[in-house]
Amino acid sequence: MELKTKINAEEDKQELVITREFDLPVELLFKAYIEPQIVEQWMGTKVLKLESKKHGGYQFETSDAKGNVVVQMNGVIHEFVLNEKITRTFEMENSPFAVQLEFLEFKPLNDNRSKLTMQIVYKSNELRDQMLQLPFKQGLNMAHNRLEEICNKLK
Image 1 (tube, one colour):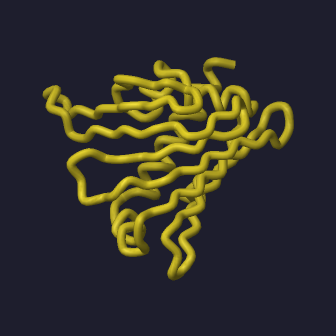
Image 2 (image 1 turned 60 degrees about the vertical axis):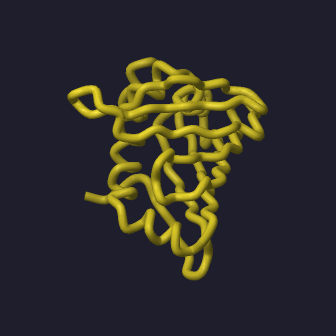
């Protein structure tokens, strides 16, 4: 099965460029990244804080079936333009991965389709390559599939 979320990892670069086209209007796609209730559904995580504005911050927490915290994620939003872009940091607490910088761009393709482009910059090529060794591609594709499914119900 072909993955709809495309990940481009150029040799000797410490970044990933991720693209995905959605059968969603750009406003609804953007909303999926800034509305805590929607984020929780498609990411499968608890939103502890989500301040969708410039200089805002966020904190997410994922637990196992017994309620034990598995991973905590947080960051700061540096740029926020409604329905167009979010620039933020991303950090997984208690992990070997350094803070990364994420540039998210949301583009309308027509009234009912949109495209998300994410550029993720890592501290080093090695850290980027370590991320790619994880089931990152499949997990992100599954999350984006859930995002589209959930948002289609909100139309």
